[in-house]
Image (cartoon, rainbow, N blue to C red; front, side, top):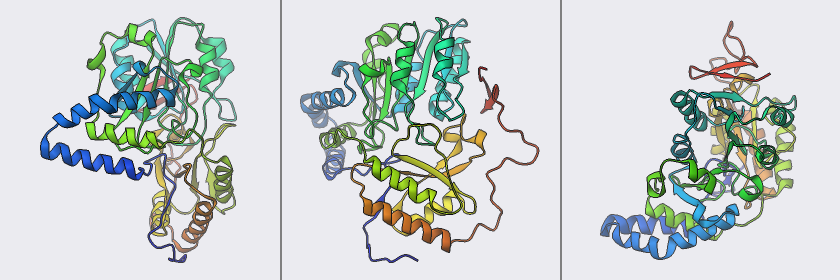
Length: 394
């Protein structure tokens, strides 16, 4: 066992799952929730209308480099994406492009859109190094492509997809461009004017360190022109106390990225640990690192690290169903950094990880991430997720 002299101080390496709220944000959330419970919603609504909405609109505008009037609050990025994308007027002659890194919630919304409109749904192929094949995109884009949906940073690994380069490829064409920034906003610069997207969605509780159940969307004037609903009809509104708390969290947000030297140090710790395998496709990585071990399961490692004061997250393959399961990854350990992390945190993580691996025994039931005998790997040109067939272009 490692020494317990750290007391109650914990190393938080899960900002991609749930960031640590600043004290001001936590206080605002508790006070206004209590006030709403005791006195009803009217004073909270007045405070939101008179103070918070203008402040939060300005802060979101600065964060996303977007006009304040083009941002709207939702209960989360997934709700924003589903609410807006579901109403797109596509038809049987249209095609949707998405990526192997797309999250489960976004894919579910895209399947529903495809089933409603009878449009096609294709998956952009990857290069051998794991990067999206931009040459394929440039060669195959045409005016039959009506929507392109790309995740900036996936939930299941730390690759940074080149959303600005994709925007330049798509700009001359009629397609709408949607970007999921749930795992990038707050840890990487996000500039909708440089990306050139029509829709960008994000969560407030990850790297931005707001409360759970609040997110936002940027919707361009072009997107709003083709949607059949307007204004309040598009909103899945968060509770007012969460709005106040997010405003307080953004007031303390630093417009900088996590120290990539720390990210490289975190990566080195994992790479130097016997039995670990990094899940890190692509040439550009973020401050999210995912790995698995050849002997211990992800849940066992997560619990062992938590007992030693280090908070990480167990990543589940089905969160990124077109990528991780096809590479025999059912679960993995995900660590993520914030601006507040320090070299001492990386050292404690390494110490705790080595101690877990030295102390813990594999589960009695033999663990394997490989599919059962006889089950084939996901094919390159055709795959099934939740009973839904998707075509992988050649």
